[in-house]
Image 1 (cartoon, rainbow, N blue to C red):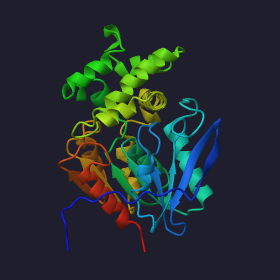
Image 2: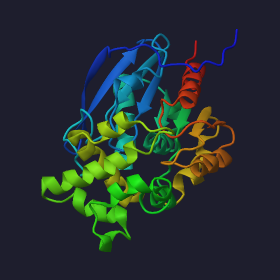
Image 3: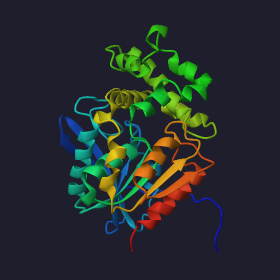
Image 4: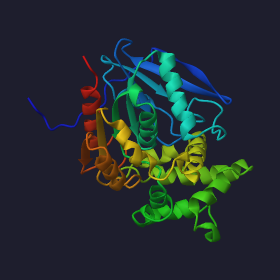
Length: 319
């Protein structure tokens, strides 16, 4: 019998294996494997960049049917060195994903990414389509300059003027015409106090604007010192360099995804990564199923978004 009750995450699980992979350049990436050792291989790509994985992310997959690899990308979470920017680019991460696939012994896998994770998933799948058995993307972001400017210069600021004032606070008025660059100066400043003030403001701006309805606990968690430093420094580092991507590269190269089954899930009222980018990807990759969730913002666990994510992971779980 069908029901309209939104689904919830699968039960809590613990990894059956975990460790650190030396990926070179002084970086060691934390990884963990969860679920069924004989299940369908999948990799979860977290957001940010710099956000790290959480136990809740394991619960997006049926543990009886999936063999799930999760990892903290360079410089964040349990990976070391903490908040490191050297040798930390989109293409370093794409290579890390391949190293992790080879380490796990998977021939190909389901690639799941939300927000920045969708950027990385697209970059990986367009580079290694033969290793991508399916794509699940949520809150689509392709790191185009227009997307960065919307959220960090002029756009989202008009929807959250109260929160925007706090975002502006660390930056002198004379530097506010280029806020990503002004933040970069402070997030790479030799004085930890300067870095931390900027990191908290940057991180809490995101934590306070990614849900359809206010979630004060989420905003507070984004302001925790260690998380904020890694999140803000790495995210800003990527945005200053526009992800080391050519303009429109990920949308342009969506043709390389032909033959890969996929799902695009997007919140109608997503302020962090507005619908336009998801729509552009949908037009460039019409073979993928496209779901626009009317009563949702950006966060993966908003009810309508979560329901479609679980439907997608179930669909690609195989036998």
